[in-house]
Amino acid sequence: MTDERIEPDVDPEADARRWVLYEKDPATKIATITLNRPEQLNAPTIAMRLRYADLLHQANIDDDVKVLVIRGEGDDFGTGQDLPEFMEAVNSDDGLLREVRLEGEDVVYPGRKMFRHGAITTQSWFTDPRGGCRTLQEFKKISIVEVKGYCYGWHFYQAGDADLVIASDDALFGHAAFRYAGAAPRMWWWAHTMGMRKFMEMVFTGRPFTADEMAELGFVNSVVPRDQLEAEVAKYASACAQNRSTDVVFIQKTFFEVMKQHQGEYMGSLISGMLESMAGYGRPDEKQDNSTGEAIDKGLSKAVKDFDSRFPPEWRLSKKGRAAQE
Image (cartoon, rainbow, N blue to C red; front, side, top):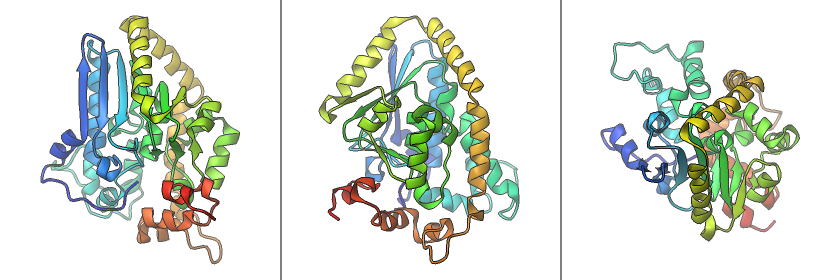
């Protein structure tokens, strides 16, 4: 999550191509998506998320690809969505047409006072794989997410939906929304992948979990020192690529998809969208100064950072805050 607005080029799609890189090796059948916006903690713009979704669709069909690695450039996997750009779109008359791939078309987007103004977008965010949030759930190849540093917000969605997660020992998992809104996408699935009791701890305290904690919960497959992370990911990717055929992987993934839907994954996505749309109805307690509306007005990053200081250092979201003394 970032609140610092960086003006994009005239062409957002050109930015997205620079910020979301893709390469494949037909000899190994391993492809890699790299989020390449480290100066903004790899925060995806709308165009970046849509390109990410398109690349997943491309890799899903491509017979040169069996394993997809998703990683971030720089010190962190990422801290979530480019919120200033998204809020700018929300507050404009037709900015959200970008979310549904209809910008420039003869389409009138529902007005801001209409329920559908937000509901159309939340449905796209939470359920439609074309939106770039839930896309990994319908990916029929093997997905591996490489996590280092922050894994918050949208990046935490990807870790929750991936087949395998390999993390550095300094990685932190969570969502700042639990400190300013109380709900976030993928809640149903995080509860499944983390276990309900520990996920409720994350939701109710707002604290991030370390890589070791997430490994104990079965959310993370392997934890290694930062300087061994790329080699560990390469080891897993190579083993997966050499094991069974792409057809067999497709059959295996279909089994897991059926199992996930039996556990209510898609239904949970719909419920999460409804829950998110109700966040504005949550009124703050008397003298409480961290309501959702106030946080948005103040700037979410600043609001979360200020509120973060009230918690024990080891429960703070920022690395700087965690390193500070009481």
